[in-house]
Image 1 (cartoon, rainbow, N blue to C red):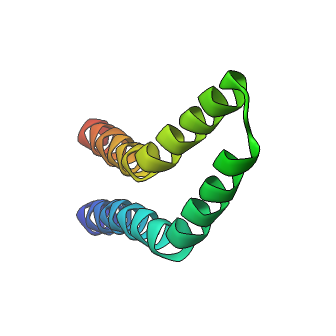
Image 2 (image 1 turned 135 degrees about the vertical axis):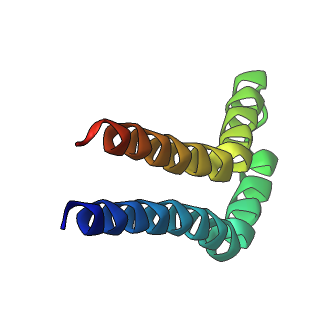
Image 3 (image 1 turned 30 degrees about the horizontal axis):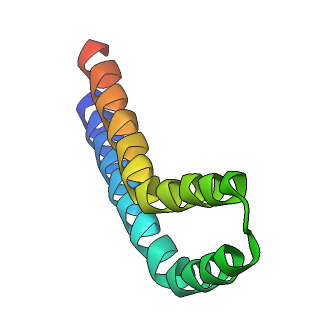
Length: 88
């Protein structure tokens, strides 16, 4: 019984990891064009150096967002594996 529960939790955690990867891909696919359109319009409006720096931060964040989501999913997977390794 305990090994069945352990297998189901491992399967659940693997499913959560792959769901986080799928979420990152869907996020970029659905909102990618809209983000770049808004960023293009905003770059034409903002004329100061501070505005350009803020837009650069937002653009960097958007480009790294799928990596952040994937790393969070991986951390969750590694944490769950560490907890399962300690279970009797």
